[in-house]
Amino acid sequence: MSMMKEFKEFAMRGNVVDLAVGVVIGAAFGKVVTSFVDDVLMPPLGVLLGGVDFTDLKIILKRGVQDAEGKFTDVTLNYGNFIQSLIDFMIIAFAIFMVVKLMNSLKRKKADSPGVPPAPTKEEVLLTEIRDALRAPNKPTL
Image (cartoon, rainbow, N blue to C red; front, side, top):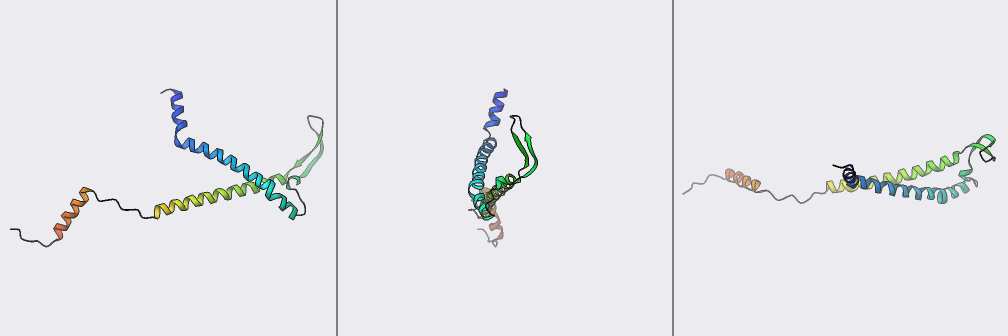
């Protein structure tokens, strides 16, 4: 089997395609959550905390280091960005938890719901007739 044919079989399997779709949707969902946190959630939270912009929260480790372009910049520990990333993660993790919980409950309902029992096979019908005939009182045959 040629390598191209093997690759085509691998790439066209359902699991690989499903995984690719999941990664693309997950990346888009991550962008939506990041925008929600940065643009909707954090500004009012900053106002409630006294007008704090979380992206401005940092600790200056060293002042005035010259970068490659000749500008002086501070070496900082940007813990405000970390807080925003942490909130992003918590929202994404909660949303995934809720989706998994919903999927599990739907699977459980499907497994718990009694279906229509299958019709007995010919062998089962024959065995049932034999059993019933053996249980019946013996009648003399003429």
